Image (cartoon, rainbow, N blue to C red; front, side):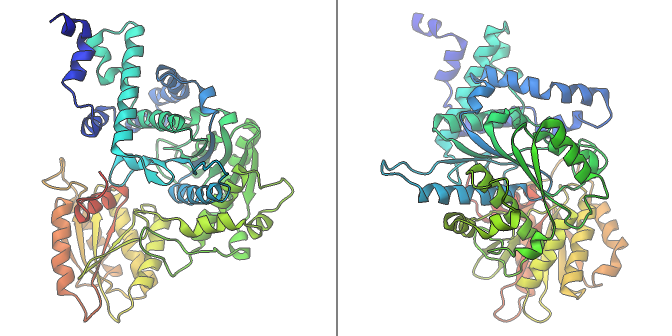
Length: 525
């Protein structure tokens, strides 16, 4: 009994806790959610202003409680990526190129390539957010790192005078995204990783990742900006640009791609980015839109299992940004070198890495014996337009139709439905592409809380009768499992000869992630 008494409450908890991956996930889900934080950060409120002002100092405090300082982060060099559209794609491409470059430079000691990548959100598992050499960390690595930090945060709270029964709870822990951000650095430092590709969460100026000091950042990238996450980031693209440009660092080169259909110079985006770069002492390079004409993408966008045959201008944008980021990171961008020249002088290793990059949930194709699933996590209007081009490439049989599964858990789901339906009509040049639209949620089974979107989605269809054919049917299933089951039945009924019927799943990362969990129940957890 004396031995147990000497262990204390924390020790007792460990004796009766597996401290495995499953428990780590449970505790992670108990942390304050990202949505809860976003709800507090409504633009214009005094609370939002105070929370924003406290964001970086608080993150520095959490970092210290975890046993680190910003100087520790400078042991790694980060490609820091913010923006609205294409962040994840830039990170995927940059990671693949860095890996191939490291492999080509492998020294006689046998040192293996090591590249850390931190992205969000995840499709299936939180492990996807923290990757080493392009692969999610293992369950064992994830759980070990999670509980190491859990104990450090608990111990720090005890040292600061918090009662033990409170210190052991989520009260003494960062919110979900902040926890995983620190955990990524913790894992990367433990594994001796020096090259990191890091995606900002939402915004930039007040984002958890922006605790990075200038000496820890090799290059800053801002991808094309849209009016997204409002009113949290602002009500105009100019305000969004101000926030995203917060990742600029003194003495660090930054890249932004001018225009992309929304006239950056006219809505104040370009002016704002230039002003912010001057304010922060960053060296900003704005890549002219003409580069998409001067330099055609070397390869088409690739998903995990399929190469796209069309070459959209956005494909070029993300490739150019990723290439310039990696070149800057590796010291291959002298100030006198123009963007076009840099692209023409691609080292073979980077070219190979670009060809090897694969992205899950982006134009992804899963082929089964009797059906083809098309999955894309696009949620912005411009991204949804690209899906129309994709369908034009995928649907070859005369009069071929598809089934659409659209989650109403997406942001502005009815607007998304309208834009997606219009996109299929515009690029396919026929109104009968959609046979059935299945409205669902991101829940795997059962019924989601506060399900009130069925009538709204029907009203959206009714308002847009002119852009889809009269025989298009809307069905409602309250979870993804039932939606996919219905899609299978409809697809079998509309099959034409030997052509596999196709089902498109859209509505954001949550929708695609839910669909993947149903389609691949044995996949990443």
